[in-house]
Length: 102
Image 1 (tube, helix red, strand yellow):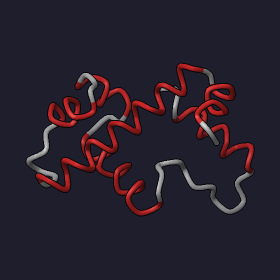
Image 2 (cartoon, one colour; image 1 turned 135 degrees about the horizontal axis):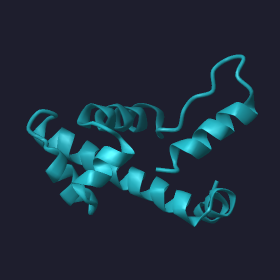
Image 3 (tube, one colour; image 1 turned 90 degrees about the vertical axis):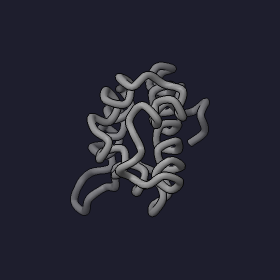
Image 4 (tube, helix red, strand yellow; image 1 turned 90 degrees about the horizontal axis):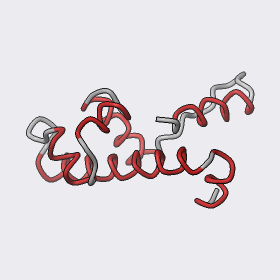
């Protein structure tokens, strides 16, 4: 799905939230690789991503949640939730929409 399609489907605010989340994950991944997990601070991640520290906590809740999302991106290629067997595609789309309304 292109950025234009996503914005049309979810709205401009959700598209910006998704872009912010992506920037945070990319910044955190770079810092975790360069410095290690423990020495990397939330302030350093925020500075690298160009956001306020509060944005990190609102979007992820904790540094370990950012690490989890970064690992998902590194291993799977994105941080979108995977559909579970037996779960309808419609339900999965609803979950994905809610995730980016941060």
